[in-house]
Length: 386
Image (cartoon, rainbow, N blue to C red):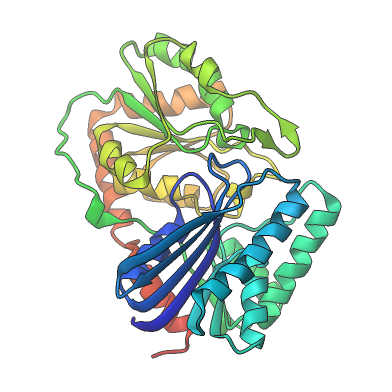
């Protein structure tokens, strides 16, 4: 795929995800690429970002307005900044991919003004109760329905969201599944033989929905049963430690109190993460079962990174990918309990031959999820190209 001009608009977290992967893809394929990012309020740097690339080379980068505002005002500020950044870019765009309803709403308005030719609505997360505030949730879903009606294609991160779009009346020709991919060219896998695995890794934002409490509760039992194991934590508690309207305490202190068997690495950029992950043995993705957990509708990036780096994953049956992990024998699915977590980790540690099989199954599974191939197919369907 090649584009004369392309525009990407997205909210982002402190960790790299699909939007950053799409930026890299478009950068290599666009004569003129504009990128507008709005960090979520819990990020360490809340300033919105404007980037521009000409034939793959970045020509400018600007950061503006990191004010800490109430949620509704933050979203209004982000929408206004998107319009301002678009004026700064100063041109019409052939295609635009906008992630989430707010950014897509702005892109659709620009399309109606004939400043953008084609708009793809990229849904990276979706759920019925996206916000605990009823008014904000109603606005979110009103914008979501507006974007579905007015976009040229809807990109959906999981099959569950594809089904929602179909129920909303979106034709299948516009309803595109865009699963999370991996950067296989950035991963170097070591050769592992029959040595006993001992290094566990937990990657991502430290939040209740990610199962950090379960890891903390289970670690003394795991350590007592399997002396010599280590837990490596890559990530940090978000700047604004609030989930479902409830404030929670930073996890770093509780993790450090578990002793020297737990190593805190803090937040790292994505390339550094992909460089480190292959050195570990077992990964943890213990999403907490809850009707408000976004992961049940998503395709979590960290699980794909784990598997691509050859790490069997212990995962709860919350995201859709847990079914593939079980079916392909690429890890263990466990219940959200200390006892079942200890059971799942113990089964992997006790079966050296099975562990090596899981590693290979994980790597083989991810060979079909190269980002470039995913985006090529998504644009071809969404743009109606043969």
